[in-house]
Length: 419
Image 1 (cartoon, one colour):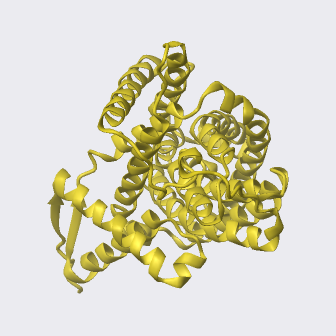
Image 2 (cartoon, rainbow, N blue to C red):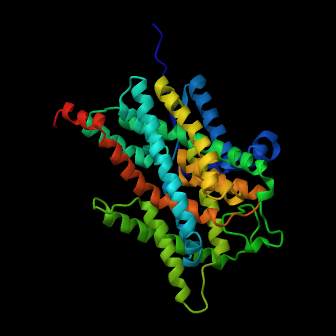
Image 3 (cartoon, one colour):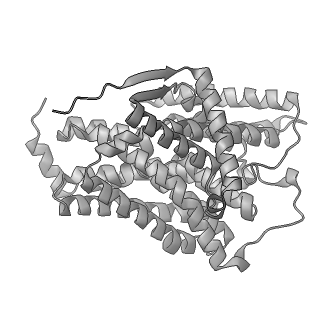
């Protein structure tokens, strides 16, 4: 009888976690510049570095029986500061500029949500599995992410008796996060190369005039005072946003904390316009936002417990693999065409892959690596964060609830004993 392996767990404190994340980012940046295949595929440096670190840690655990546990204390604040920076860079004029595009993009997003759940439930049923498995491997975790997956996992466990729902949800969300960061750049590159005449860039634009998130590696002039003001603005967004989220918790209009933080940023941005001779220093905000985004992604990916994916049953892997293929095809044949079949549409397709399989930060990272290589697409950086950070959660709930009204799910309720 084979002996059970004893795994030695080594905790890494917050300071060394930050150090490792910084090194992972530098490694990812180095690899994407030096290795031709990574550059050609336009993969985001945090994804490359973070995934490589996760693979190394998987090897250490598998062959050295040592598990490294990073401190996750900074992950949520970094994510919230990233969304706050998005809000602080979005004024009413910009939102009105992207209004029509946001509405059209949202239509495309809703279409994908329905397809993801239809495919998930259909495949799970065809494979003889619980159809709830199909919803967990559908829009709940792929378009919803880890947070939505955890919430619905608890519901499925308590209400439908699907006891392993939360664990399955976390594994599905992890799988999606990785693939979302891997396929977005290559798909955008394919679309751009297919119609290179539709790449429109303005060579007269200066580095200072570029959109805040379009060109993250461009050097920008800032001062110590402007950075201090930016930190104060971000702190206000986090403080007020988390307070509002707490007040709304449990109500009919409950919203995720990052959505509240983003909208506090939008409101703050537009309120300061009434202060004479003052405006938010967008260059400092963009730098702070990009730093938080990169560190968040690096920490999230290097902390992935890839060995959890080994617990996925074959039916689950089949469903998720097909979902990834469908996401890619949907981005090419629906998102790209729906958004106008131009350069901005290609960037939006990359972004859709990011949050259609993973999360909004992954979507922004996908778009950044494309715009850094081919040129700015300012509207894309308005549309994707607004839809991915706010509207997606609202419409996803409606779509999921619609599927749960199907007879196959309502019949389950009668089979589950009342607690």
